[in-house]
Length: 336
Image 1 (cartoon, helix red, strand yellow):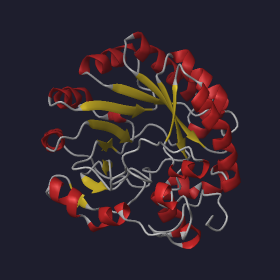
Image 2 (cartoon, helix red, strand yellow; image 1 turned 180 degrees about the vertical axis):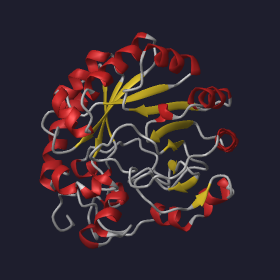
Image 3 (tube, rainbow, N blue to C red; image 1 turned 135 degrees about the horizontal axis):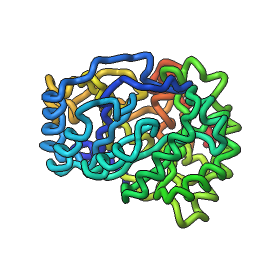
Image 4 (cartoon, rainbow, N blue to C red; image 1 turned 120 degrees about the vertical axis):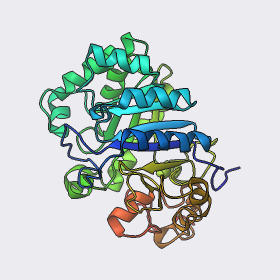
């Protein structure tokens, strides 16, 4: 049986910095260059999360390794009992950085690789040589025993080439490859027509990818898309229905503002100025996400209780409404 939310977030995704040395075509945060918190305030954030029993802290948004105090902050967070992970483009991970990542106690690191073809990856990330640097980073981390995942944004450039991505991730010894569905926020919104798939293309992708997930045993193939319920492929053991945003996870911007997720630009509080527990329990926005109503073609759909309209971030970005059906949904008018 699913629930609306837990007593506190399981995961907080923290945009530790908005700075990045890449200019990726799909980046959700490049248009929102929020200032970052000081080292002292960043430690206060860690204290608050630990006090509220958050289990996982994941650095993302810009390139985390551009923050000079990253390793010291991570060591502080792990000492407080948080399991710290990071998403990185890999370009700054040389042998010395890989040693520091290991020594800081990272629970895992995700390296972004979007195509097994170097030229395709480099063009998508708009950075020549980025594929080779990501591959180097992945291998250096595994040599040091750092748990490794590969993160790939599924879109026009790779939706038919994902088996090669899985093989590449397996060759690095990655434990997981995360096949993220394309979002329509930030640069992703500006480049939507060039990069996003049609609903029928999303259906075809999942109809190929889900069987591979079931058959592959030496690497986990992970998705984060509520519309998998259309194929009956949702996680039957999931604690919550639909998206986990605002139910199991939150996002903290570089300046400390809190949003339900990085792709939903609605501020619900500030981590240093507002009471975290009260915000989590009483935010009207979070309550809205936890109790969504079916509208449009979702009305009467037999899958609505499982997907709750799909990805709210995409619906907001494309239609301007938290209640709108996911634009990736391939279902015709509701299956009743």
